[in-house]
Length: 151
Image (cartoon, rainbow, N blue to C red; front, side):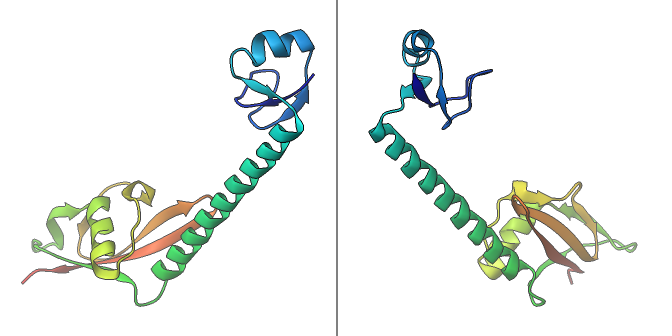
């Protein structure tokens, strides 16, 4: 019997896969537990539609990430912060990824999730710092952060 897997089944198939399995196994185990559906013409069309929607959503998200990357990597996109600092250019406090994201949104209107920033430790010195952001699978951008001393 041909079935469409609705969930991953170890050793048998992955979600969305169409496969031939023994009739008893399909009826008594897979279909009964909601792990698969019978591969009828209607179910096959539904599967194709769902796959097309998922692909379109993936492409839209990737295009959005590319757009944000282009915006971030413009020469004039520099996130500026003013902070109190000591004599050795060390900040009193630090600039975290949360502050960088807030600064991006406030200064340029660009929304980025703070978990996408690759900032091993907060910025604690004055000057320019490049912060890498993984926006999407295969789409990475560099955010320039400039910290100046507060008067």
